[in-house]
Length: 118
Image (spheres, rainbow, N blue to C red):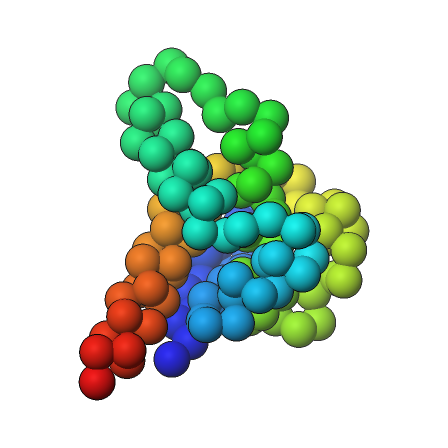
């Protein structure tokens, strides 16, 4: 079952969605494993939140890729190019959006695990 959340970015609502299709979309678009990237980002987030440490360039790239794929799923009218999509925003706060993406991913994984048990 797909899970959708809405986050206010630049004063407007932006929807994000995760489903069983998310890893495939991510792999096809970026050639990367979403499970590995989400695990690494989750660890990094825990390391940097509430500190003066920073996300690396690669961390931010993974974050932008994840946000794009999850938004594109929720909003098929979003641009097909991630650069065009990012240009729609003046700011994009990783500390606001990443926790929502991690929650969506966690809920999605739990839903998949529960359906496999049945």
